[in-house]
Image 1 (cartoon, rainbow, N blue to C red):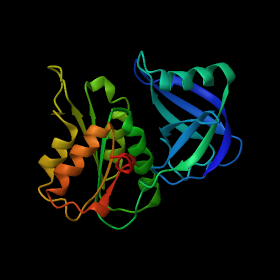
Image 2: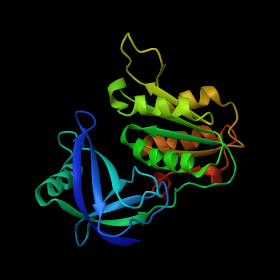
Image 3: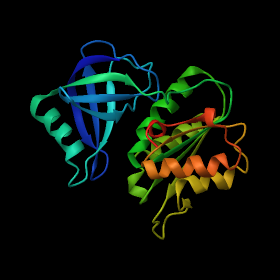
Length: 231
C-alpha cells in the first residue's frame, strides 16, 4: 500500500445521493482491479471506498460515493474534497481482486458496491480474456442503477459479457428482473461448483450470498469480497 496525494478533478452526481469523484494522483496509482482506497481523514481516521476504474488506468482514481442524508462518514470526505480540492489516499487495500483462473465469473453488486465490480469488469474486458463474465447489479429502484445504459452497451459489444439489472421495488414500466439480486443469479445457476463469484454490497447481503451459493456447490476459494474479512 502507498499513500498518494490526489487533486480533485470533478465531483458529479450519479443519483440524488451517489457522486462520481474523479481524482488525479500526483504519481501513478498502482493497485489490482477490485482493490479499494482509504481516504486519509486523520492519523487514525482512514475511510474505505472501492476504486471504480480499472487497474490499467493508473493516471486517475474514480470513486462512487454514496452520501445519503445522515451519512456523515462519507459526507465528510466529500466535503473535504470540495473545500480543499485534494485528498490523500492509501491505495491497494483488499484481497478480493480479480483472479484469472479460467473459471466463468459471476459478479454480484448491491447499490454502490457496483464500483468494485465495475473495476473488475473493465479490467477483464481490456485484457482480451474471453472467459464469460456476468454482472448482476441490484438496486431498490431502477434509477439506482446509474450506469445501466452504459453496461447494456458494453454487453452488446462484448459477447462474453452479460449484464443483468435487478430492481427490488419495480415500477409498472420496468420489464427486467425483480427481487433480490442474488436470487436472480441463483435462478440462472443451479450449480456454482465451477464458477468464481465476486460480491460487494451490504455485509448482510454478502453473508446470504456465501450461505446460499455454497449450498449450491460454490467452493470457498472461489468466493471473493472484502466483506468476508469481517464476517
